[in-house]
Length: 357
Ligand code: SAH
Image 1: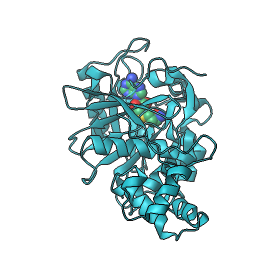
Image 2: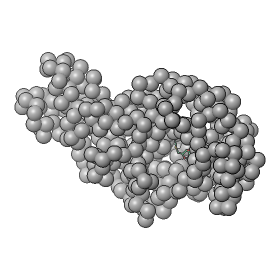
Image 3: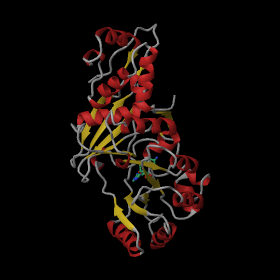
Image 4: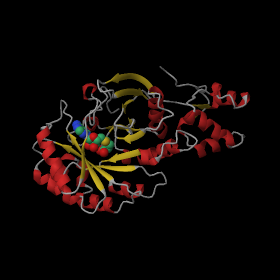
């Protein structure tokens, strides 16, 4: 299952076109003495028409195609395995050029079609309930690897020409790999490519305050989801270690000042851990924290796993918590765990055997 193609000879440095946004491809063509529009054609072949071999790019002159064979390549995450859950959720294990692997998940019919992609191999944030956090950070993904996951999933699910959503909720902390993530979103949003509207993209973060502030100025701005998970600093310090650096008050102030699209809202994700952060008092504190922020709460009853020292609360506890929030005027939903039987659910993405070098 390799569509990873076009290698130059070992001696020639080859440029990887999958790492380029459209302006960079145009500049690369100009640098090769070609008109800039060739860069746009290349970008369209790759991102809109899903063609990753130069040979098949029939509107490029043959001599250019042959030069490109030697001077450029188009790399792509290679599909290693695909597991389909009883609920249709599909987990893809993808191998990167250096042999490292990441997972990406297709979540059908929620009612949207959603691709959940990774931004890092592993993660440095070490949240106490998350399996990916146990891996530590192995490396950042490149922009091409992030956008490439979407291309591969769109192809595999035959959704390339239908509307789909993207959630940056796979392995890794997207704002800890800021530049590559933003560049990938730019590539994905490009009207000459897959043209994924920013309102269809949701970036989930553990709460890296300076990066959230920076995000507010981005031209391609995704929806924002915050992994809150606690209602006091003591509680959040213990569950989400980055809280020791950027505490709750600072985080909530940043959210309060975040520029939202018209009718836009920030999603607050709240993992529910039995007896830890799921009491009625927590629910009331959570409602107070959200005061003045156009937000909604997404409750994530813990997906349990070996090595995770917490348990999932009963449905009754989850419902009581949800009711207190909605009685306080907070919009609340409970995330249905999808793909738990294939370990594709939130916090369950872990590539066995990947260890820090
Ligand atoms: N690093 C980003 C992106 C990950 S999104 C972030 O933290 O937001 C994945 C979501 O699943 C996060 O809200 C994460 O806290 C949550 N999660 C992690 N482990 C989980 C588990 N075992 N059960 C349920 N949700 C979990």
